[in-house]
Length: 242
Length: 84
Image (cartoon, rainbow over all chains, first blue to last red; front, side, top):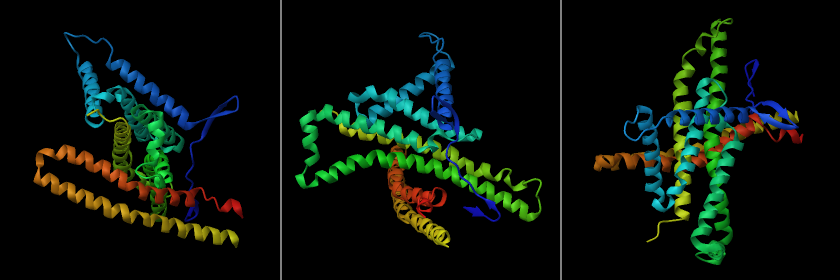
């Protein structure tokens, strides 16, 4: 797409380097950075814990664990409390992966491979929970309920879950990337039009205001929604016994 | 010439795909309005109402996001140009 004389290019993640012909993209490298950051943060928070004299960081760590456990218990039932660490992992990874764009890096979640991977993990967890709840035979029979005619639709709706979850997260983050980039081009063009060729004055400050919505709000919201939808779907597949 | 036609049609298609935003716009506005009503009636349940509303909004939003993804593909990764 071209805007005026300048070509507007929105690229996918760049290939950083190759190992034995395996292309390691920017996304993979940045997700290593995010993982290292989360592991470091968790190790820092849980370092030197004590029962009698808890420090401030220990209280923060306990609050995080309790909040996550409470959320899982509320939406999935106490039978599914075993999923709490997974949900916390997805939540923290998604938040840090999206908020990395505040540092001017490409958000990890702006790559469809990442969100599709998470959505596929959710998909297999749902299927596993269903099989655990109904048994193998009940799981297969469950597709032809309430009548056998609806079997294709049931299968399709099952397959639509990971697609919609991954596209939702990817689309929100990627649209933020594209709009920010277009805004930079437009503001540079505006600066040029006013006659500030050497120094694009308008690109200072104005993108930061929009970044509050596209980076902070969207990042938090999508991480929360992805986690909540995973919890709701898996919880519905393996409900609390009456 | 062919390329120009394909590019023009893709641009029009991208614009048409963005019309998908109408549905989620109406739906989310309706959901938020109802949530405001519910909070007005029962202010003590505002936390749960807000949380549920955001999830519902996100689910309603997905159709709009599908349209957006199609528009983005047509603009930046046009599959039809390779078929010329």
